[in-house]
Image (tube, rainbow over all chains, first blue to last red; front, top):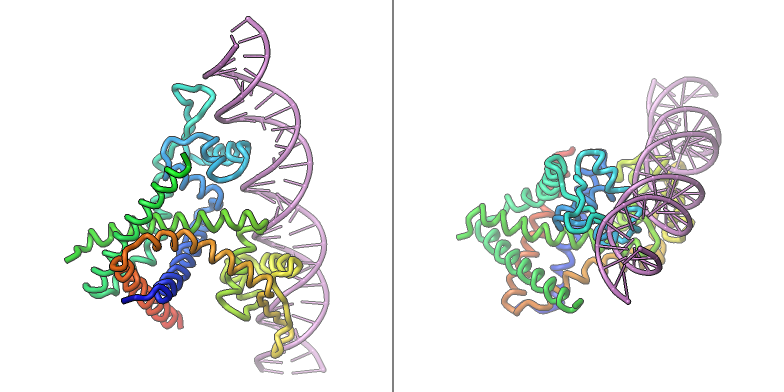
Length: 154
Length: 154
DNA sequence: AGATATAGTTAACCATACTTAAATAGAAGG
DNA sequence: CCTTCTATTTAAGTATGGTTAACTATATCT
């Protein structure tokens, strides 16, 4: 039986390691590409929420609409984003990733996984099985929580 | 038996969720405190490697020594870092967190855990047990890999 | 001791990403 | 239709963090 204190400790220890690697590897990779963190964040938002407008991004990134517009413009000029008028509301624009933008995002995600997959490679079959189960459990739990949060916000 | 493809898929799905939350919650929290990302990164580096000098930070953050010095100076002035002469080499300084700096770091880490612990709260005892085992396995594997990387760099 | 290398700081300068305020243009309501 | 609201853009100004280059002070090597 795992007690709660021990569980919390394992959780924190792992999170500390993982969060650090995730952050560090990502910022490092982004720097090599010549893009900035805000640019990367915006691309990730578009990646996660296909079909979003300037105001969506401004809200999610918690910056002014002006800032979002300017940032988006740079990414459009760099060929990573495409900006199109909304068909139903011609004031609104919606942003989508270009193939180049998609490739950039894929590469950054792969970069983030690289370390983790190396860690996973050295596991035994049994360990892998346990880790696999845990990932499925956590993914399910995280999604459930997201839903319950979403319904609370109604 | 978990096949490799399925394992990789679970891993990626979980990482995508976790990395996003970790990044997003952290940047969000930092913004509310009024500090910047580079400032936070520097504090985290000092937190992780007690007793580091300007050149260490400059190397790890991959910026010039001048940039590291300037950034450190702001954090000293803000009361988060302390800068002392090294006893053995009076050219070198070493930076340590002040109590205020330590509190700031603790709060940011707690913020990062908050979401995860909420996810964990809703697990059954069995699920918690599995996740606990997986965390221990992964932490051990990650530390082993760090060591083997370090020895390769000799 | 004297030359050279190393640790850090300072200054001048530049790019980026923010902000607010004003402008444009389309949507929606009376 | 005319007002008002909404979505976005543009412009002007500011702060931050980065750069290189020059400088100080200390350590190291011969």
